[in-house]
Image 1 (tube, rainbow, N blue to C red):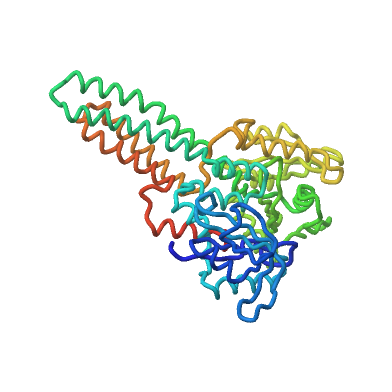
Image 2 (cartoon, rainbow, N blue to C red; image 1 turned 90 degrees about the vertical axis):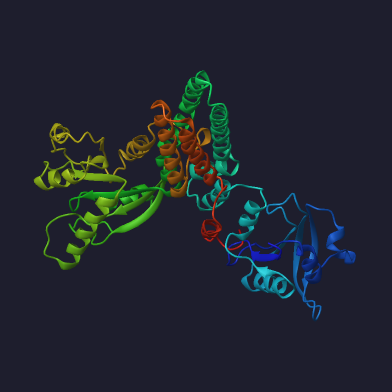
Length: 460
């Protein structure tokens, strides 16, 4: 990390402001070569954490490239714990690229994706779970997703993991005392009793983390939601109503939708990937047949199914056949076309025994859409914890480590209860301690760290 790095930290394209960031021991010296401040002030002599007016110049011919505002931040009170310069210029592509190139020509190296955050991690400003939360924050699609990521950036998960590790360390210390004094039988009995008591709360905390991990995944990544039903029951109209715009073609002709159409929408704080499918039916039309097969695949992979039935018709065998496919899926049954005469027998739908929530709607009058949105949220969150008052695991790596840590803890508890030698019990507690450490970046390989930060955008 001896090299000074540079990158554009704002999105490429036209904009009001563009930012080029430098970080490293030579950041001030490099900036001094290409930036002229009023009265020829040197950057090293101006106060830290101040913003200053100046111009970017080409040091070879003294040509003024751009009028800028320069932000100086001296280590260690910076994002990377290194000296940082941020050059704020107009957001034109050509100008900002010129400024970056001048930084590179005068001693900086182009930063790798996520390298600024990686340096923050390696310099001890944040741990690995906080670093992962940075990219979650950038990519969040809803207010709740950003709250979840912000809680993790602020160290909510880190604090819990450190607390659990401290409690496990206490258990390990108690076990080691017993190993040092094996001649005292009473001590061994007390040791087993103590570690089992201490293990209960640790186990509950790990189980709670895993229980809420599904909610964290939903908040972060959204729900794959398949809109399923026979042709011409209102699937595309539902998509358009939830999006509040006309994305899908709607006609009275059955089979209008021939392929899968995907769109994202925020429903009551839940990010949803809506997938409008071709009406599932037997057809000889080659193109429509492909769409029907894709619809069946979407149904298999869906987290949530919105199953539409035409309430203006009696329940058909095809409806029953399709409902059978949703038996093991989180499903909401939507009885559509409420603005027309109701001919369906709702008790017949209920008697099928799937226990899916049933919502009555009209895509023409928008009746029932609000009820549907509430039902979607309640189905997955049931009015329980919100991101602001809970700790979540936000990715597969964390879930896998916590799962393995819980398995090791259970093995330690079982070994203690079975009366095995305490030094055997110690192995599983130590493994649990180390696995929890990996969540926050301790005992983590350089290869894994490089892979994680490679997912970041350039300049972050």
